[in-house]
Length: 338
Ligand code: FES
Image (cartoon, rainbow, N blue to C red):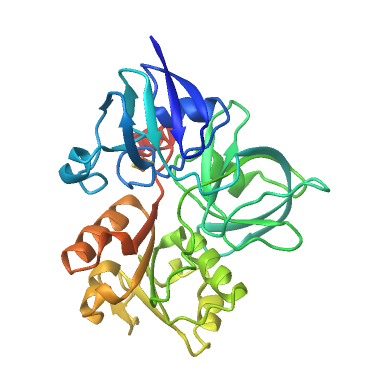
């Protein structure tokens, strides 16, 4: 059975089959609805059901509270249509594009992180907002999602930080076979994780691992906009060797308005800095979290722990923006088997 979906305020329409999620149906028809985890854990795909009936698959109560659900909010990555629908959702980004890109540069940034610079064909541009992400489309049609690790550049180059994941098909390819000039098909931009420039509140940036990539984009966007608000950056990783971008981050911290605190969850013997979970370090230091806009990016467990503990400490919900990355399903399965 298939239903009609109308989006407000954009007036876009598309069809949805009862067996597919609303995000998947829109995506299939070239309409980008914001999403990040596609697993009901991050809340990026949240919007309001103006009319019609939906049913949800599983989701985390941290992504959609009972109160929000009672008020008509829904997670469109987990929602399936039971009737024609009118939905209200912020499509604050340009339409999705599919483009070929050429691998221009490959750098080892650390023991398990590779940086790629992708170049688009002459005359083509990806109109993204700093903090958003793209999908790389593999030869079998599967997608791999990566945040763009920088604000838009004049030369149109796209920077990605790829972590080597055991059992990860694409990351294995990147680490062992990828060569310069390889053509990668990309799709994007996507995501609702971006700098809110209409705010004057100081910013608390919390990154876990390669969650630093979209945080880097947000820092660069603030710099480009001449935004000199106070920034406190916490970067949580396991051990010192995981601080793959340490020199650059330390250079950022030479600016008067930016402070940087690395936090190790499995500290090396010679580590003299902070240790523990990154969100706990934030709460040990920041007693007035309600004064900040918080941007958190990293693994879902880090982002959801940060979100729930910051809200419990008094941070208003409208002041936290987050981007949780989830391994693709086939990668999760491969990890489980290993
Ligand atoms: Fe839907 Fe994360 S909760 S994309």
